[in-house]
Image (cartoon, rainbow, N blue to C red; front, top):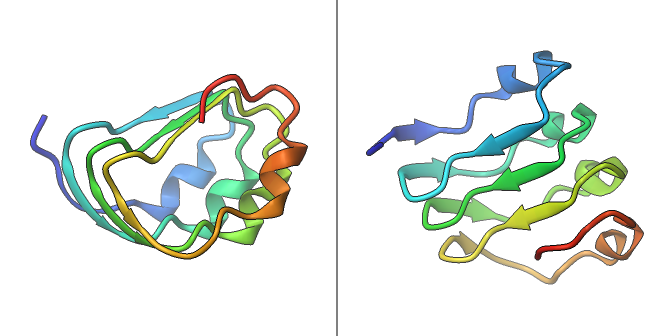
Length: 91
């Protein structure tokens, strides 16, 4: 879709949202910590310019089934809390 800009923090206000798939765009900047409030099944930033590290606030996303960050410029280590994502089927 050739979307540009940063990830909007306001997505965290969409409490019924189950999927954020912004794959293959030109979105840059960090993942907002506020996304940890969401009960998502899918969170995909595949092929974007997302940077920074994975926020600790995402550790509470127990409903997450798919987390796609390949093709991004995230840095740092993979957080231990990902092991608590019991429903995760795709990383």
